[in-house]
Image (cartoon, rainbow, N blue to C red):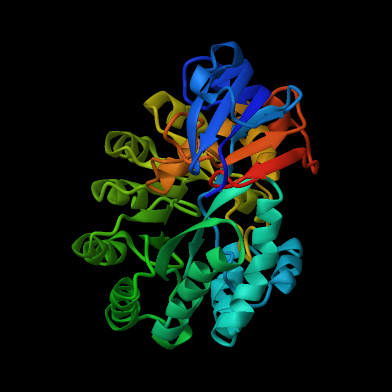
Amino acid sequence: MADPFILTHATVATMGGGEAYGLLANAAIAVQDGLIAWVGKADALPAIYRDWPHTNLGGRLVTPAFIDCHTHIIHGGDRSAEFEMRLNGATYEEVARAGGGIVSTVTATRGASLDALIKGALARVDALLAEGVSTIEVKSGYGLERETELRMLRAARALEQHRPVRIKTSFLGAHAIPADYTGRADAYIDDVCIPALRAAHAESLVDAVDGFCEGIAFSPDQIARVFDVAQELGLPVKLHAEQLSNLGGAKMAARYAALSADHIEYIDEGGVAAMAEAGTVAVILPGAFYTLRETQMPPIAMLRQHGVAMALATDCNPGSSPMTSLLLTMNMACTLFRMTPEEALAGVTRHAAAALGLSDCGRLAAGYRADIAVWDVDHPAELAYRIGFNPLHARIFGGTR
């Protein structure tokens, strides 16, 4: 375990509520045994910490390290050809129905070895870590058969052995219907998805269970069958819902006390109210909205009105959001969806933690993990304001600098 230390002469965005950003000027943070021991105004630093080694941050901004709570960074190949197709007028649904989309990535992923999947993902992980990310959610879903789904999850787990990062995995076997099960979605759920989920759980590869509830994927009733097994196994659930249409997926997910419902551009007020009652986080994904050139925006004002927490994530994937920047995600959320800079920062810290069921990170407070980002900026709003600019000064992971 690293030696204890003090960060001094800092502007600290605790993200703990109260004042805007939970902002503390002229603040200090004490770190010991990988945890935050104390945070507050520097002139109130308790005597027991004053002899610890000090690092003077020169007034720099300190925030919780970022959390990317929705990614598909484990995959084979790329889909740049489909990018061209969409620019020539094809819709995401038309590409998918023509055999492209998710299914094309499935072919590349099935042909990739474990080492190749890890190597490909590490480049994307490095881009996220360079922007102060400490925790990344990683989904399966490009195998659509047992062995590749398990290989993707093993690759995700292995990332922690190669980089100082915390990985949370989501089983996404109900992501798309493979070609050999066309027109037989229920049979795929029975023959492939549920057995693969049980096998992944037996191997301790799963932290949560996800699904894609959409006309080109699975119905709410089909997803519910997968969620029933997740409940049986004691696993929390989350859902891709209402991205392209409104099938009532978010409302169904809320019945299972889902951690999050993600995308939700087409959600109605009944779905938002159900999420609010269940405490389900809305994960907003502007990268996919931008890449697919969508026009239906998520109902940010309605989410605010109902008090639904809003997280942000890159949705890093080879087709609809080939993005590895949470800073850009924050800017897009503000410029495209009119979220505030404070909402954006909360979306990649405390609300992103909630979307993963984590209660030990996402804020700067005593007892929380010492996952910390130090920035060369004066005010938190600058993190969402700038485009294509990374002001990260230092990243601390679990108290290690």
